[in-house]
Image (cartoon, rainbow, N blue to C red; front, side, top):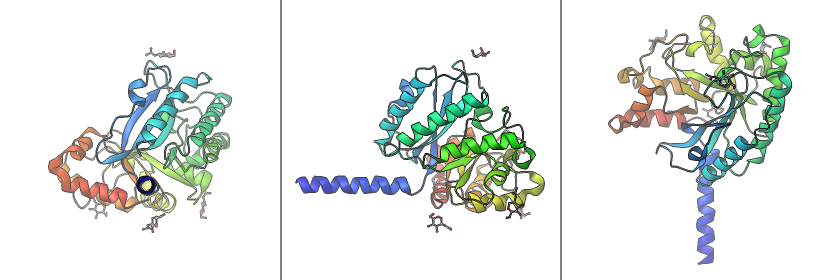
Length: 309
Ligand SMILES: *[C@@H]1O[C@H](CO)[C@@H](O)[C@H](O)[C@H]1NC(C)=O
Ligand SMILES: *[C@@H]1O[C@H](CO)[C@@H](O)[C@H](O)[C@H]1NC(C)=O
Ligand SMILES: *[C@@H]1O[C@H](CO)[C@@H](O)[C@H](O)[C@H]1NC(C)=O
Ligand SMILES: *[C@@H]1O[C@H](CO)[C@@H](O)[C@H](O)[C@H]1NC(C)=O
């Protein structure tokens, strides 16, 4: 009896670990904010049936606070969801509890915050699986644009800003978790050709199959950057979120014939070797994914995502 119980536990753990170390697929958006009551967010509730990974925004204030409460909330969330076999892909960004977004504070506050959260992400190992950490911290929504240290991308940026970007990523890498940064041009400037750091894309399929994903890569040199992304990020926990409102926003996500067709999102996932996507954005995508009458298309998208590491 005892042995059987142990065996069942062992097998269950094996299944959990197998799932944790394997693929990600659809991710589910969640957000916790410093200065707010996050109790509803950090209590466990089941995810959408096709998803077992949270994409988690951790919003912190840019005023040099110690962030003790939001760190406690994150640890509680990690315990509650980790014990249910759910993984988390976190990104820290700056903002205020009144819903005003902020960009990064000056360097000493910034780097102190990055170190604080690196320690948190390191300490949480074993409590919840973290397939990848999105670098975050810099720019609006932690997207590495429009902040004081991310006015430009790649070699167009200053040596001083590139050093800060490298410092953010290297500090997060010291946790032992994989780290993704936002722009392939920054990746090339800082980690040229290396798969030790991967990429995330906040604007997948903005321009459809042949688009530039809202300026993720320069449209005039598209193929070079596609090749670069596949080289460093393809099949390397590369992923992010769809988008319909940036630079090259031409794709109509409500056109399910196109979205599910041979130049649709599943083919795009396979071309770029994408491992995960938020299932619930843009809204037309969410409606497709949740529509049981579109099961064949959604199965194909899910299978495409889960075929890549
Ligand atoms: C939100 O709070 C911040 C910090 O106190 C303040 O700078 C900002 O103006 C506020 N925004 C709004 C819309 O009230
Ligand atoms: C990256 O490496 C490639 C191939 O080694 C080289 O041609 C290119 O100039 C490098 N780019 C940068 C920005 O270092
Ligand atoms: C993408 O570009 C290729 C090559 O130019 C072309 O064959 C294909 O029809 C294009 N697909 C879409 C959806 O525009
Ligand atoms: C993707 O990565 C996994 C593990 O890292 C590897 O086993 C697999 O062969 C890779 N797939 C391709 C097509 O390279």
